Every structure is written in C-alpha cells, then in structure tokens.
Length: 239
Image 1: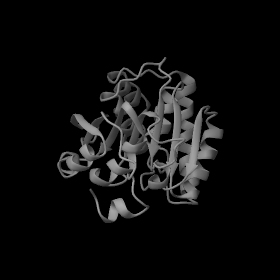
Image 2: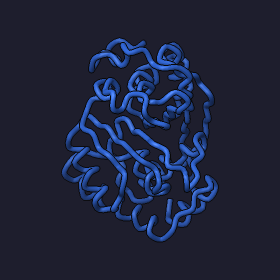
Image 3: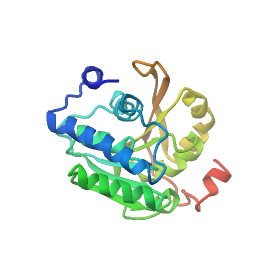
Image 4: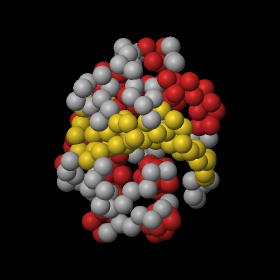
C-alpha cells in the first residue's frame, strides 16, 4: 500500500489526513523499524505492508465505531504491543484521550519514545497486566471505548477488556478470519461480564485481500467485582 492508496482507502472510511498527520505516520514507521532492531515489535517491516497491515488495519475500527474529529472520547488499548490500534487512531483523531496498557516494559518504553517523537498529547502509558489494571478503581469501568487487536481469544480477551468499559460504552476487538468462531466460544464470557454483542463485520483488507473481523460489544451492565480474575487465570481457565 503506497501513500496514495493509503489516502484513498482512508477516504472510504471518511478519514482525511493533513500533511502533519501524514508526516506523523512516516515518523511512526521510521521509529518502529529503528526500535525493531533492538526489541521484537513486529515481524512486518516492509513499508507498504506496515501501512496496510498495521496503520490502515488499525483505522478500520471506525467501521464499527465511527469517530468525528470533535469527539473527545476516552480510549483504552489493552495489550497494544507496538501501538496498534491506538496510536494510528490518535494520529487520525488527535482529540482522543488515549490510555495504553501493556505487560512488557520494553514495549511501553518504545511507546513513550514514540509519543515524544510524534508530539502526541493526552496519551497515557501503563506497564501492567490487564488483569490487575482492570481491578484498579482509577480505570475500572471508566472508558468510552476499549480496544484490542489480536492479543487472545475472545473468551479471554473479554475478561481483560470489558471490566474497563463504562456502562453504555463499547469494547471493539480487531480479529482475523476466525473472529466469528472465537465469538461463538466467547458468548458466555461476554454475557457474564456485562457485554452484549451488537455487530460483527467480516471484510477483506485492500490490495492483498486477507480477511479481517471487527467485533462490536456494548457494555450493558456493570461487571461483577470478581472479574478480571488473578493474572494468568483468564487464559488458563476461560469463562
């Protein structure tokens, strides 16, 4: 995906970028590649593929959670890794208030440096396990939107993410081709944690046509205080 294809496809999502934002994406790519030589952030390093499979793919979240350029909503990205999808969202929609939590200190250090390079404001980083973070009263049920890309199966991911969503807010998972199968397995967990499945969208990435699934879950009731369980338990014994 070259620059013009990137812009054309974003236009289909009703996203327009100015020169400063495009420059931020360029700096993002350069910083990612530079740091990737020191710590393992991504196996995808070809520029056209980073733009397609990381930057554009992250922004497809607007298919299920349309954002205007004025909305100052709070977003929490669980297990953000190299910053996907939250940093591309922050670049495209600078007014967002973004919180990123990741269990690996090296990744948080990279993201802090990235935020400095890109001059991002209102981005907050936490080195923590999602299970612990979700029990923290400063963050529990505080966010309008909680996102995760990959990370774990839906039954596990729901326990890590839904406790952070405020009632009336949304948890949106970005998944690959097997997203619908995962959702079937995760239905009980979603309901137990106070979520309601609102929509599932299967689509193909442009240029190379790999399948993606976006799962939209609304938080309809508070999560029981016993969730999330202790670190490691959600993965070991999914709901």
